[in-house]
Length: 229
Image (cartoon, rainbow, N blue to C red; front, side, top):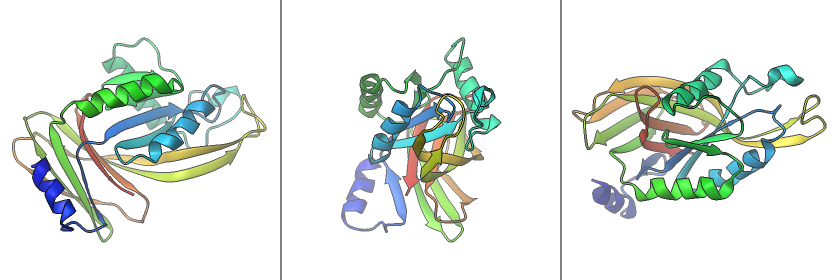
């Protein structure tokens, strides 16, 4: 199927409003405006966000708010997602800056060499789900095919490509920091067993980028992904 999709893309059968991905690697950065060790990882995410073979997402957590600066992008849901990953990794603690790669491994987000090694490992591994997403008015059409059955969550993510914040208090007081691909909404829009092709329509108002992730239930591996910028 991937060869067919590639051929169709080369012949112009897909419009610029449709994305078909041969499993770009998903990198989730857990960060905070109040974290003094996070700015290098935040800057690195800007570089990852420029790549077509990576879906880079910044999820701001709220557990550093108490030290003097409330993160304006943080939500308890993103903190909960990070804690769920920690449980799946059998990790005793959560931390920032943390990058989670394809839902399978985690690394300190400022350790660029380790992050790039992880991305390359996941690029070399064959994905088990092909995903495509197409805009349709105020919605998106999602389709997917799986190599094997499973218990998968279909997730729709919206993000702002760039935000700049002047930090007035806390560990980063006096700094103006720029953040890439700040996640503003993360919804589960379906559940799928992979036994037949997935065809799903989900609301997606506005022109912000759209990311679709297919992930094993229980904060397992991300087995397929696509995005529209």
